[in-house]
Length: 394
Ligand SMILES: Cc1cc2nc3c(=O)[nH]c(=O)nc-3n(C[C@H](O)[C@H](O)[C@H](O)COP(=O)(O)OP(=O)(O)OC[C@H]3O[C@@H](n4cnc5c(N)ncnc54)[C@H](O)[C@@H]3O)c2cc1C
Image (tube, rainbow, N blue to C red):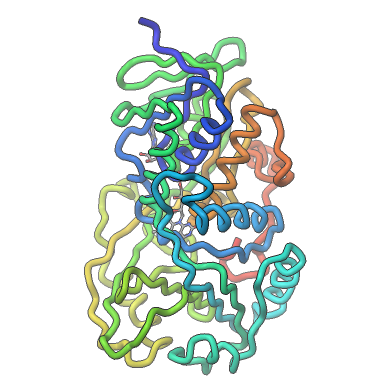
């Protein structure tokens, strides 16, 4: 029997899963989602899943607004599963040289209707009195933000998509996208061919290899990032907000009741090696560096216990901005990848955009032109995020 679909999606991370659900909700026909390992087994499952709306590009802010709405109202909007969203707030701590740029971003957010505001050093203390604030020039506060859970979101999107009839295949690896006369004809997998007139590749850093076979350039550096996990001391008190400590380029994100995940802001500060996904145990010095920064920011936490950390892969593009949309060289081919360590919160919005591009040929949410894959070959990279050190706030 010939195996065919209307649409094949490659990758069961938050992006492929979100696209599958958004397409199925619109009744897009027979959809097959192919994931070689497990749902959420890539970057999505290891994500810190911080949900913030602080982005330097207005278009990305709009995508995060769509995501924030969905994460916070998952039962009403998606109806199946959950997002794990906790509204603990998002607190930014700025060094002097970033304050002016931060003010511009906050003004833009406020124009878009987001509850976000700049804080003086003293006001930072009102929000989180346990912080040491000597080297903090100013802060910013998003009370409606927080974090969700990457694995839960990917699996919930997939469960909801399944209920709408999406055929989810776990195990086959997509070896290539086939085309004839410049038009997509399907995918070749380790378990046979699936014919389809539309293919959406959302395969993390592996997207590059699938596109390269069609002479489409997508430069992605996979960077292995360490997360340290500490158990806060019993006297710490209640939960803390997600803290983006721009002064020392680290973040501290609460997990469950008493844990805090510690991560590095600089997208390139990690290990680049071929075993990027296989080695999940972080180097000791990476963990120590994170714990030192956390303990300096939260006095008294020098005696917090360190539990075993883990790693995950950032798919970094040269401009640290995502890449998504139609692949113009091949009719019927679409892609989304290169989220450079900040793609979790974008996944609901990107899924909606991808579904609109596939079904309607355009989207009204944002102008997607700047995010096209062709920008690398055209040497037309995005400059957004340059107002912040190492562009880690994109
Ligand atoms: C440690 C860490 C912390 C992060 N923290 C945050 C954060 O706080 N906030 C935020 O917004 N973002 C964060 N991110 C980034 C975010 O998690 C990612 O941008 C997002 O999860 C990417 O999702 P994805 O679906 O594009 O890729 P992935 O989750 O990597 O999914 C791609 C999937 O494709 C599959 N696949 C690949 N090739 C093939 C093939 N040939 N055939 C079949 N299947 C294939 C893979 O197995 C994988 O499951 C973090 C990332 C990491 C690693």
